[in-house]
Image 1 (cartoon, rainbow, N blue to C red):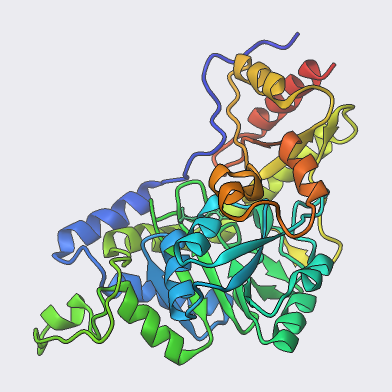
Image 2: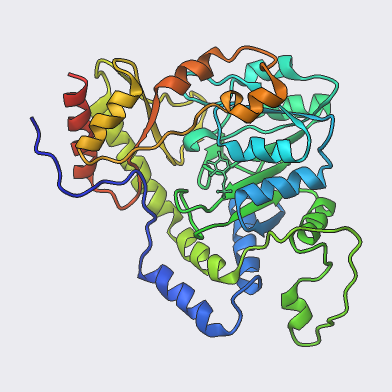
Length: 382
Ligand SMILES: *Cc1c(COP(=O)(O)O)cnc(C)c1O
């Protein structure tokens, strides 16, 4: 028996250093704390990272999805193809727009969307495909980009897990379409709450900026700045989904450390793979075979030997935190009540959905923490 640790090891914890604290303090002392020059700088840096010509910061990835679906006019009577094994926020936004989600199965090994199944799901009502780069492993984008072009569909990458994810040398968001990143504290780069839309169309960018802030043409930074003009008109009502400079200050400090943070995540993930491989009753995450850089946002294993609830209970006894990413969306009560059965069966999603559990993974974790989790799992599954 291994000695159980006295302190709790969380599943995730943001890596906040003195540089982050200093950066936020500087913003607080500057006299301008809401949307302004720091948000603009964070947007520029996302253009540089993704090679997309436009970036629009938002209050969350969920808000970003709501804005994007609004700007693309996706609504009543439309269908959107997305994996079921994703966070419910995407499906909620599709539902709130009055559109219908059509779910695609995932690959049991990588948990990424089964791209070869997508074409079967396209109907005359389909408007968009929303792939998710699950846990930071890129979706197979090449066939999706081709399919979207051939069927005239919007391709919106849910890149919430994908700051630092590359597919065949291209960063998430760099495929000529739209991507949405999340800066929630669990994600690879955080602003506490926040998100970023990257895109290639200048008209959509203008519209996103307007709808992000009440429908106003000019933002407060410009209206209140030197030579500003406080008169405004609104041609279409908008939302209140802007990011603040206080948050952007945190994000800029985090982004400076992106390589270091993600290298640490990758190191810990490979340590898990090395020490968990071959344990009877556990399936490790599989890695895509095409060239890519994995952002290792999550480390999701599947428990096959005992009910997951029992496995979770025992992890708790070892003082180890865990997560569930994600309960399949097609099984959510309102989804079933509103749309009934999905158009096709989702056998791999349902199998994975019963077995998945996310182990602790965050940059400030030590190698010893990983070895402790591996040793505990060996004991639990013995
Ligand atoms: C976190 C997450 C979101 C939502 O991000 P927020 O910034 O919290 O709104 C969307 N999709 C996926 C796959 C996520 O993991």
